[in-house]
Image 1 (spheres, rainbow, N blue to C red):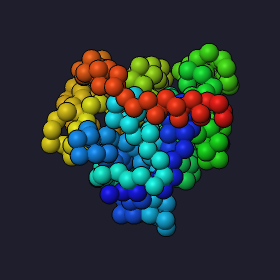
Image 2 (image 1 turned 180 degrees about the vertical axis):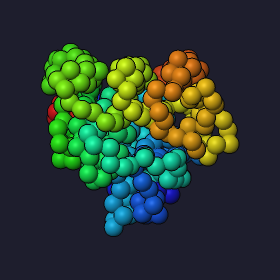
Image 3 (image 1 turned 90 degrees about the vertical axis):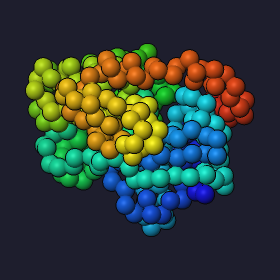
Image 4 (image 1 turned 135 degrees about the vertical axis):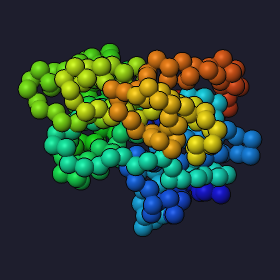
Length: 286
């Protein structure tokens, strides 16, 4: 059992957890993830390790309530325990000195990008972050990114906060202004990552994306996380999760991720109403 020591909402349907996992806290590197189960009958949930505190033996996870299992997770509080948790899994991010790097996070993808942005800055890179969301309410980790990045830009689709528009538009404006960009990391919804990769390919900017296919065991045995990269089949859990964005077949990735939409919607309809109450309380405080 893994005890939750801290739990707080960052936005509606997005919650941050600190969990006791001392061995993982000591070993994990930027870009790696864990797989957990909340209960005996629960599905396995892969989540990026956002941060860790080796001294206190805790890891930080940020969870968005999308399906039944993640929405159940959001109802858990400090003092509750997770049944099992395995990690760190996957390959660590390729951290080196590139020069000027731009880290683009869309929605909860910002949480996935955060540890790599931090590591890139520690490697001596000039680090620019672009964080995008549908509206102000869904922006996360702004303060944390401002602390580790040289510049942090915020975009919202509706213009309720920061710059009105999409992350691609802000990246294009940086290129148009003459910013010499050596490396781009883009993490978020698949259409966003595809749009970023299409943009940077035209300028020859090395771009890495973090893929999020359906995943079961996390160790390359089930084959559920297959993706097409550079014309070859890869298993994201062991070959990634980060890949060259210019080589990813995003269309096949989107199609695979839609495989169980109907079943997920059916399960989600039976979610615990306690979560709705907690979200309402968070919105009242915000």
